[in-house]
Length: 185
Image (cartoon, rainbow, N blue to C red; front, side, top):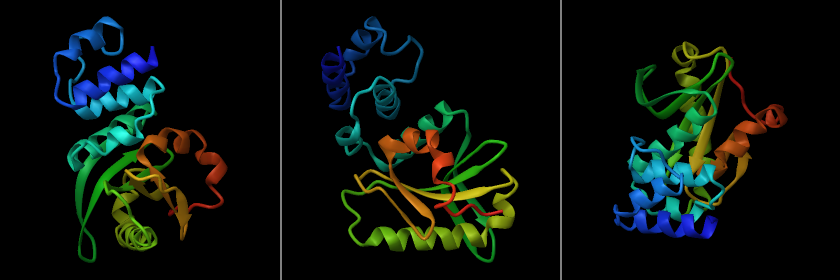
């Protein structure tokens, strides 16, 4: 069944919108659910389909939308493209928060990051720290997070760098990483 769903998802991503009816017939989507590439990939991830290669087909806005769907699935409130006036202006791709923690996401849809991931994590941490007093309005704890379309997965200066298809795993095991992650208060 997963191979059939994978083939249908691939066809949808390639522009064949006629497979939407088949996706509904097999119970993959409900009538009335969004028929966007990001939503279909989110549903594929929930169904156990490996979506890592499919994410590369998304445009950057779709990639960010995919990330928002995953955070929403885990019960987080989510906003996108927040501009804050701190010492200087700062923009954050996604803020996902609960009553306990706010994840401030830098989304990077790149083919590769090479040695730049540590620089991205460092700059993101600086930006989050600079705007912390405003970000604390979301939740009493703030965690800077870099989400990537690559296979890269590590923690740099306390900032997790996580592949988009592993966000759910990261959130589910967040308590196990707390001693390694920068949590700002």
